[in-house]
Length: 220
Image 1 (spheres, rainbow, N blue to C red):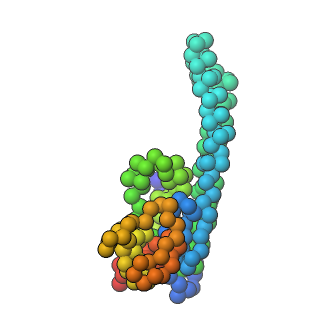
Image 2: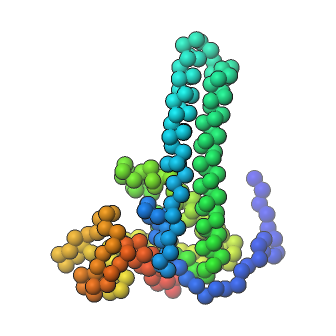
Image 3: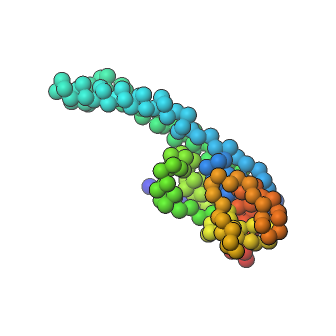
């Protein structure tokens, strides 16, 4: 390994923008910002899943055939050829996802002085089998890691906040759904109206606004 140091920054620090933003990571879109903008989820794995499954079935058949013929896999040309094809498909998904995450994280950091995001508890989220594939496909943890080191690189500020009630709380008046006899919002509730102040909310936009507010409080 190698460590580099310099008396001058490795990159030119961009000028301050005076802008702050909160981001809500979700499976409907990749993210929604406190400004109301959304970034679509590219779903790279889902796009290639069919081709990958077919390639892996062929690989499995060739492995069984080599075993039946008592040939070691390392000398089986057909098996090795198919193994490289499967590896190439996995690498393709990885590279496309990484390029996407780099582009989004760099844009957020360069264009805002402060970025707030929710802390991830991906281990618990992956226990939900209905969402496990979608969660694993988006690369949220890698994305937050990129935001953290790029914030330091470009002399910006980045914080993660506790996600508790960011989805359930009204950004306008602070009322929390699931209290005072109301029911909690479910994943199917994409829009809702606050029963206290009657403000209309788009679920992810409201959550991003709450995340920004929590980030500003934590920053202070």
